[in-house]
Image 1 (cartoon, rainbow, N blue to C red):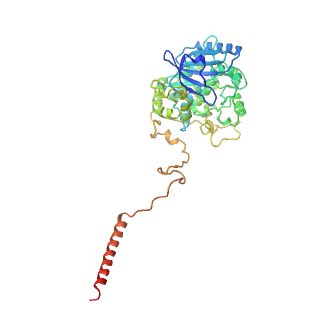
Image 2 (tube, rainbow, N blue to C red):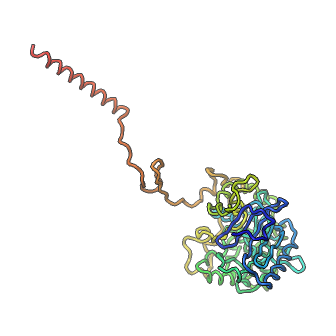
Image 3 (cartoon, one colour):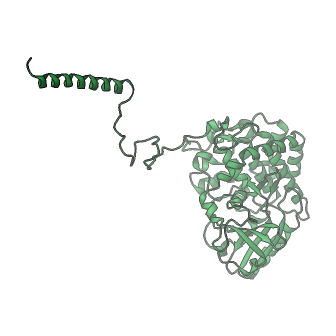
Length: 446
């Protein structure tokens, strides 16, 4: 995209334009700090929308908490708007849990509780402001995990900012977000919708499954399921969770907001009172160390290329490597079907008396022994799905899982070993016999 004048004070290091069309930039300020610039719109913006954007941006700038990605600025011009936040080097929680699901496992419980505690700490702080500040889009996509184990809630108010400019951007959203029942029915975001979304995040982490996976047949079916909060209760999917915590999460997942009396602060205190969060952070740091190499390799070649703008030099020594921005920001493509749904999905997913296969909790991986780098073998590595058949087309390489293609026929067999020795002996004896016969013939009759 062409650089707008509003970006003149930044050095653009990387650019990412996902399928959803939301351009994100990794930029360096004149002071040398790294920032994430999320472009909201690069078209003319009506004056009333500009005022609404300014109000929303002011709310986010008030938040200053260790578990919240710091908002730095809202770039606002008559034909351009972008939200600027601090850049956290690491991996988005969305990519982290997808990486685990791709190996048929979920994150260890101590890590899940630690992540949830950080998210709830951020929400409790924001909701305690006057007036309360609502996130409006809590999900794995909105959480970033730093390589040192810091967990921060990002995108405060971003869903609202994008909704304000959506009518003027054109196009449609590539992914239907998972929201609280009242939002699915067209209602506004409130602290109660944030609490529901946080509990939905808990389901995602504690089971390793994507909520509402069995309702992905159509957007209409998914919206209906969300409006009814059609989720298997944790007492069936994770009966081992302490009763006090499970009951609080079940209350947070009530379809009727009037029955959702539990607050972010109450959920936070419940988790802090039942789990060793320091051990959770230590396990997270260990797992990040073991997975980091493969996480970095999981960034697609397209995303790496998209992270190198055409108008700047590649591989500058002072820059982070291509793909770093993509890894730390959410992947807007839908999850692969094999990661969210059962291969034997029921065509009638409603009114389930038992837990559907799509919501049965996956086994937890072990942070101390899990897959580390290419070539290593660990318990969760053994549960990876089989690779598709491959055909090699280079004559110098072997052929796997299929008939040979463009491979020359094998060379004729050569004699060796006993066979060769016997052949030489027979030839030698034959030559002697032939020589004797010729010699007698030359001498003639005696």
